[in-house]
Length: 168
Image (cartoon, rainbow, N blue to C red; front, side):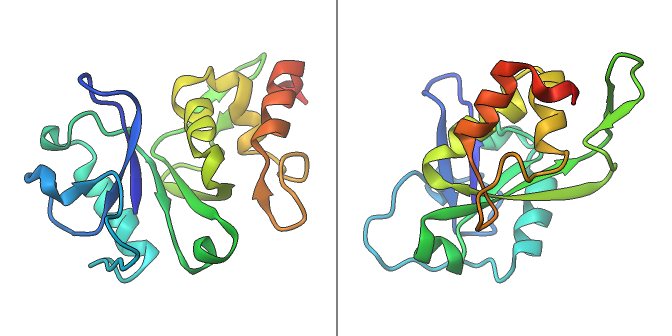
């Protein structure tokens, strides 16, 4: 499992988590693999999600971006994509009449498949971007932003945001 980390002493990076430890020992947080053998204590995506919700608010992990994780799974090894999971705690109301909840459902995980090269761009749209710009596109119908394999296309997302298509 990987999560974005926005530490004050380092540029934006992702940490690789292979242990269920709470991160009290920074040795549990890795940026690179030292060899091709990788093992993890996590046995399911559900365990990753539970860990994220439990650990994200702890100060010992630094400034963890809340409600967003990336999981490298079997498919990742085959096609270079990651499973991205975004948790909606409580939606915010968007739209001209503030009647459009985004993300649509509270207490729900939303899954995206992204190219690993696009993970930072997706993270920027979700965390750093203006919710009214990208969220209606990210959490709306995905046919405009995914390819035939269901992989989110960051360039298409950026183009739609630039064109102001979030209101459609």
